[in-house]
Structure formats: C-alpha cells, structure tokens
Length: 236
Image (cartoon, rainbow, N blue to C red; front, top):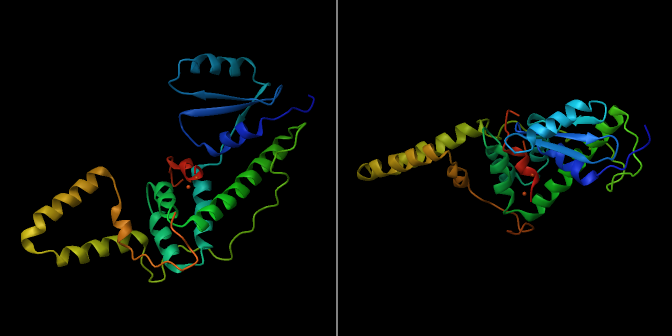
C-alpha cells in the first residue's frame, strides 16, 4: 500500500476525544478520518461501510481516560506554587476531575498555557507511537514534527503535605464551617448543602485559601478512573 496523506488535525481530535458513543477509523487509502457517532442518522450506514472494507479502515484507539488522567496528575506534580498545587490536587479527586481541574487553571493563565503545551506533547507522542506501531506509511509528516518522549516529573504527588486525602480536607472544612453556624440558621445551611449534593456541584473547592504569587495574573483539555467528561480538559 502506497504512503497516505494523513489528515493530522482530524487524527489528533480522534485520539483525544474519548467517548463511549463515538468511534473513529483512519481511511488507509486517502488518510481521512471516518467517525461513527451512536444515535446519528448515518451511523448504521457508516458502520456497514467499515465492516465491508475491513482492510481499508483502521480503528483509532483514543488515549484512554485513565491515561489522560495520568497526564493531568503528572502535570499537577510539577506545579511549583504549593497553594495552587493543593487546589489542583483537590480538584482532580473524584468524578468530574477534568472539569474542576480546567476551572481552577482559568485563574492562572501561565500555568494553564503550560498545561496545554505539556498535554500537546504527550498527545502527539501518543499518536506518533501509534503510527509507528501500526506501520502506517505517511506521505506528509505531522505539523508538530517528531516528538521526543516527554520527561516524567521526578515525583508524583498523591497527597497534600498535611497527609490528608483531598476529599477529607473538603469534608473537614465543611464540618468546621457548620460548627460556626448559629443553630437558628442550621436548617437553611443543611437545605443548601442538600441542594449542592443533588446538583453534583463542588463549590467547596473555592473554600481553599487562594494565595497566588505575584508572577501569576488572573485570566482549559482531561480524563479513567472512568472519567469520561474528560477529554474536555483538552479544550481551551
């Protein structure tokens, strides 16, 4: 089979979009991507097309949510500012980690941009490894060039310096706040907490004191632990 001209932009999207409702296939004849989204009107037709041309279409296995979570965890371990690292460690604990991680970084544009650079590097290395493993011959090199394997941080931080798990810190802070609420206002406070629980929100994240160094100004992309919201961490 002759070399193909790959649509690198579409291939990159296919690798970072980890969704149980979508599959992507690389057309080995023209380098285009064929996507099948469950529920769309042409999904059955596209699936039949792939099945009838098994040697033409190569399934793209996106970076798993678990792997993308590890990228995020490694990045957090490299954050030098301790208060920000604490906030990020709390943010990536549990379901919805990618969205909370992205929300915290919105207020730190320098670190946010550093995250996008790091994430692009590991994603491009992931794609490069896949292309080499599948022995696809390409006529056009990727626009980002050849990528060396990104260096691993010296240490991955799994817990805050206090030794408490992120979830336990939030629960302790909630208990401390409740202890300070007058008895007469307790029913309203409990009703509000029930509202937050039902919403699935986590605003107590913002109770963590925000101590920013002067070189950060206020103003994403990931991940799985089955965290399928989650390729959202890649988007800006």
